[in-house]
Length: 482
Image 1 (cartoon, rainbow, N blue to C red):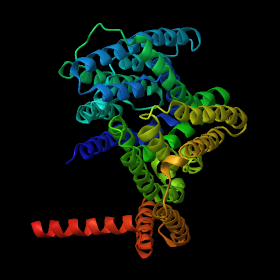
Image 2: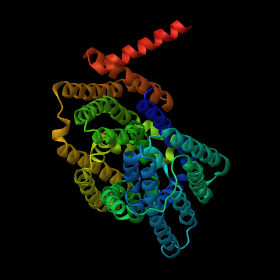
Image 3: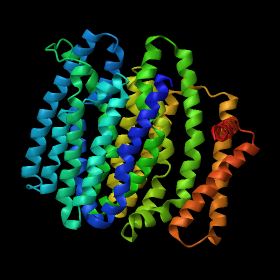
Image 4: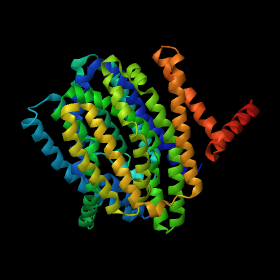
């Protein structure tokens, strides 16, 4: 197995653990804590996430890029790591003091807000950016499996009713802290700390450049929950949060390539292999749309039934919110390719930053206009429009880089057409299916998938034909082994 395939495999496992296990706790937490309890936790966590990202100045993405550049030089690797780590530590100290001041004076010692401080402490030990830059994804995955299993088991053991919001907050923060400390313990095997701060100004300047899009992204990925709690209610935050988690889970599993491809495309750029880079981009867009078009249209078909079955009757509003946010699956999947595969490793800071800044300002305006009247539905609408605008601006910047040929255009049209027909047929035929929610969801999923692949086979689409051929050959090999 090649290095890139191994890394994709490890990151796929990581995403399943990072998102899959918490995803399995969603039905339990939704029923135990209710919309208000979920909203209280999410509202406080949005502030912590926002402040950590603000004070870290985009250093995670920057750290991966810089480590990837010097990973073959042990001395330079240690110096670069140490300089970035000490800068992060100083910034986090300021952030922790600022947050604790807010807890005391703004939130008047609210215990949920207080215990969210564990995430700040955990951030001091977060060195995942080092191992991602070194393409040592196995270590990160091992750490994440451990911490998520710990949190997963603890939630079911100790969180029993709506009064356990504080306990739930402690479990979530402590599991991240323990996992980060465990990974930090292995640090000496890869690098050693140095006192060098020669690159302090250069690192800080580049972090700040990457911080602008990072902060802007926070406005429409975290600040929406903060604004919902401020302009509406924590119950509306709860509705929005659970729908957002479902959509984010789907898009994140598709977007695993971004973590792996950033160091890889950085290496291609360093070797001036731009033709290969551009071909990788075209292939990435084509394959991503092959996956996300049917997923997005399929999700639209099952969203309301799935949310009612998965979250319970208290969260029926979340079904509508999830449908509104469904296009985000496509927007974010393509955005990862354009950003992490090309713009960031190419140091196209303006092209990477401007779409996100435009989107952030638009999102801020739309939230102020829509949240007071429409609550979580308004926030979801603002998020979807924002993601669409960001993607449109990125496409404008990359129109001379992607340069789709007829084969690529034909494939994309086929994927879109097959997905729309699939959704229509499933909706029309599902009226005669069983009333059991779970059975209906499973039948829609299986029937939709078969229609999509069958239509592409009838259209003689290459990717679908190769997929069926590989599955057929795999079945033959398994039968021969028997």
